[in-house]
Image (cartoon, rainbow, N blue to C red; front, side, top):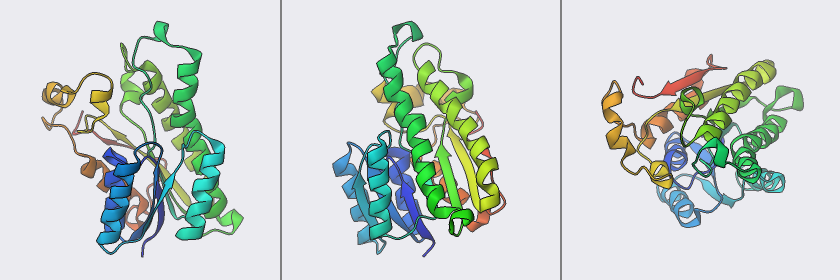
Length: 248
């Protein structure tokens, strides 16, 4: 057994692929979801049917009470966390900045930033050698939108991912001496349903010619990178913002 991993937003896309890959690598996996109950339950079933260990926990990472409950459930059912994947996130409501409301921004940043802070806090309380833990790994799922900017539709989303990159760098410096490695993956054009959510279902096809590898990536390709970052094979990797972009 490689340890206990929490994957937030693990009902679909990169999160689901990460949970499944982690289970293949021997992790007991806490599969968190907010609304995608059927899909998340299917991920857990696949893990268990393959001989792995997993538990399903509903909760919004943007709500502090939910985060505490997620971790307490994981403690009880799987044991002490050794790897956190902050994957849960939202693109918000696409649109121009002059169409954005304070409520929209609050909702977006509560999930994409505050949720990552809260989950990291709970993980550090359990992992840190200062707190009697054995160390561990945190991987934040960011995006190359953090440096592209998202003008026209996704400036708030891109700004939240820029904040996540900064959080990754600062947290790595803060908890590195306590046995915790912190990294981020910055996916590019990945074949998930996120594009359809903001009205561009053919984005992976339209933008593929702009990618040096001339194709969109898959959730599995991002997942393998995430699980590698959590593994002992990446034992000297921390504070990294790792592009998974096909060279974009």
